[in-house]
Image 1 (cartoon, rainbow, N blue to C red):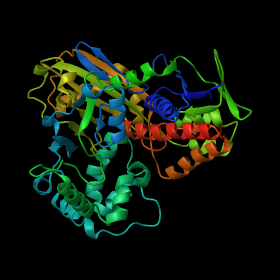
Image 2: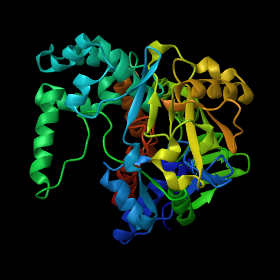
Image 3: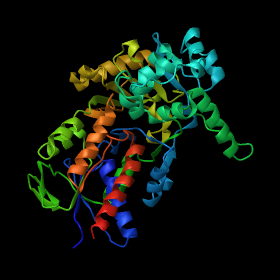
Length: 470
């Protein structure tokens, strides 16, 4: 009899793990068909899409970067390569709010020196980065690292805004090696971010064909071109779900040990399994694992989460005084505003809106403004409209063609200081319960790309360990 593998959670991690298990086991000549239990009525987790009034509305992230080969390999296997779209070139401009004004972020060293995002002394301190103090022995927060290397003004403005856009979090609480491992690695290898950027640019230039220009991007932070699909990111999760055995509306109440395997129990659920993959939030995994290994389960459950709301609004283009000429803007915490920033979604992916329309995706809440999510949908909408009127000139009397408030309570895991201890706790739980695997964005990367890459690692491991047992 074929081994029974159960995956709990049909988000991007659980779906991609199922695909990985089937692929690796088929290649080994021992096909394994996992079953996925999902508590919600449909698969996809935070990555779903729907179309309304001609607008493509993503429930969670707005796209993925082109820096993870495993993502594009997965897309090709699913037959979705011709559905992929890249961000509009006109959306390259990015903006930041500083001292009450919307300012363009520089895209080159000369533009940085000429720009007004930082004061003169702040810019000079960034240029001093190669001579900054070396790394301390203690684990650094993202803010401490940035302040040490590029100065407090840049840490308070540029790095704060970047962390807001990715984590909705507080850079003074996030662990540098956990939240931005690439920055940590570059300092280790080159001793300086500027030296790293120059070395990487030189390597890329050598690898380019004659006459080609290197893509834009800095050292350590998110780089590359944003991609999506013609009908939104939900195309990917729908394609994965269509190939998998997903059982929706299955709420797992207990995970029991049964011999060398497991038994999963819940309302209408009583399933034996040889192997179980928990691709669910850390706090849900803690609840299921406390009876088996209390100490590491409680440590795993200490991973904090930020709650966030996304307000998606579509208008006729006439609602704005001028075309949107960029990706959007972010607001550092020091500006004390009610929103975290706004993606100019129709500029990024024009195919996602009907002709003559615009779409804006505004983020509210996060680690430092969680209390705002206590407001009603109508209150959040009015708050968002007021901010957009100030920053992009949205006509306050304009009637939206579509308007949605998407809430994600405890939506984004925060890789806070000491995160390595919590990852070690996950490893200890797997060691204490052979046949158990922990996955999802709470451990080894919050981005969609990280989830897909880690899913292949987990899937290959499940197959290898299953086959090793005969």
